Length: 200
Image 1 (spheres, helix red, strand yellow):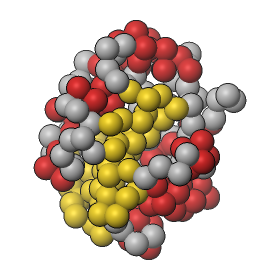
Image 2: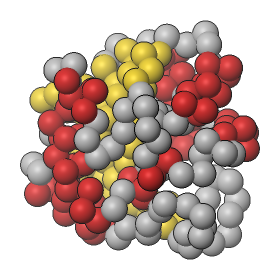
Image 3: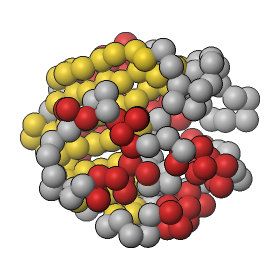
Image 4: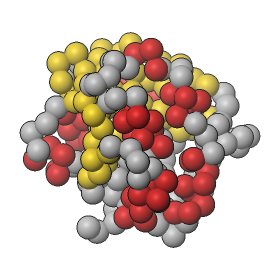
């Protein structure tokens, strides 16, 4: 599969990124919004799953997890670190998610953790429409959104929360939760995150 622009830099530094991601627990990243997640064994789609940290944690809790990751080097890291977890890996990517959509499957929970910032302006609405289309009725979509300076070598954008929330609502989602957290789990002083949770 051809590597996409948003995955630029991940293949070259897969080991480094994997070490960084795996140094932070699923609980630390998701505890602010875990209360909105449906109970197991719900169907979960982890989009931009990286090393599989979150997908593996959910699979071990009894969820049925499909994990989307376009970068083969990151999927290899996932194989090395989470071989015991029951995860269905899919080589696919935003904005099209063409392989996932072709399956005809719908999900109770969509996770977009540190992935939305890789999309160009013209890709965001199609991506949102496809994500909404993959949600089951009353399905939950949880997003973490990155803010702060963008490294020069990365295909990444600081997207205003208002834009993302507005697109989600325009596509028919109900905003359940939105909060800005002025800290970064990796301790970077100039980076902060916000969370947004929606229901279909």
